[in-house]
Length: 53
Image (cartoon, rainbow, N blue to C red; front, side, top):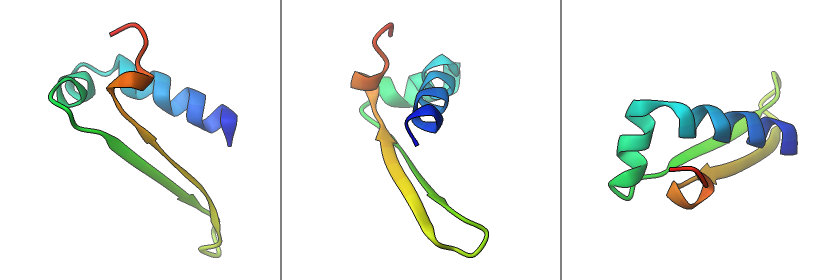
């Protein structure tokens, strides 16, 4: 899950529209499950995760 989180966070922080929402105090919640709906993991991306903003 750490690799998925890093890739997703980088993509979110690089997106101009997502950055605008994060700068307004918003956040993105990601939840992952398998094909059988078994929970795999979840995380939140917020402005503090985007070190270069």
